[in-house]
Image 1 (tube, one colour):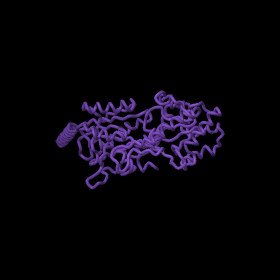
Image 2 (cartoon, rainbow, N blue to C red; image 1 turned 120 degrees about the horizontal axis):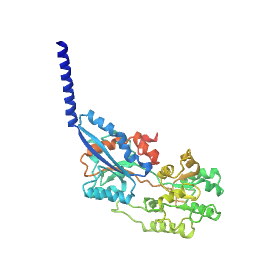
Image 3 (cartoon, helix red, strand yellow; image 1 turned 90 degrees about the vertical axis):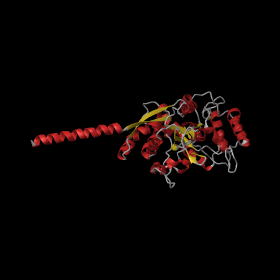
Length: 393
């Protein structure tokens, strides 16, 4: 009799437990968060980083008694920036925008003014003005300036980079440079000892000596882009000035830039005059990355990752070792002896669209990917610069 009672009690307990589980499952709400990213092959962590952390975020929600669970929809490809940006505008107007949208920092003002993205200030900071998530305190301070518009914060930094001058070590060696001269070039550029005048003269010498073909002494990017700003900045141009409303276009600095490019293409012939708009990126990358055709060229740190992933044969055991051995990099040289060498960065940032129904969950995901464990996967594989102080280690 006692055994039957005990068995019945066990069965009742099991039924109650199962009922609680069913009720709990019924109460759990699935929330789909869509992440839209722009990326080449080595940059896939811009989206895949969220897959690394979503289980942890869901576990935190369960622990807090929040019945919502996040399901990710990741969309990451490379349609080109123009098409990518137009897609978001059209999707926003149609009420179908992704919840999290990766943008260039320069888009913040336009997207905020149009009402396409949310003001995140009150989710980034608590009522006392401290960061609401400890991860955000680790972000390099001036990167927060890149997401600010009209005194408010509209995004979370995702990555940064630099846009250096690259040079071919084998070609400089063929020109007669010693290993010491080659390895010291970045320091000489940084100190102002080696300027654009010196670079152009070296490129001319290489052409005259038959080390490179005419037009292959120096290459800029083959498409329009922000890189061309450093020629303007290097020639004394500014785009903003304290006490002046609106943007500034310095016509004298711009004239010096046009004269500079005229000199490169028409007077010295160190740069191809048909480069801009005629070369495809694939041809540009395959030509500069072999270190045997172009003497100097300007690109981005992420090019390093692209060359490793897409432009070196699979049988090359150590492509990055080959890069360090054959390609050097430095700041963009000063344009005059009293000028300064420079570089340029273009931070990418995560935004939350104004149509997001669960911005608090989107923000939790953004905080979760803003860690050295996750962001460094992207920085190392794609050759971007980390955004966190802790990534210096």
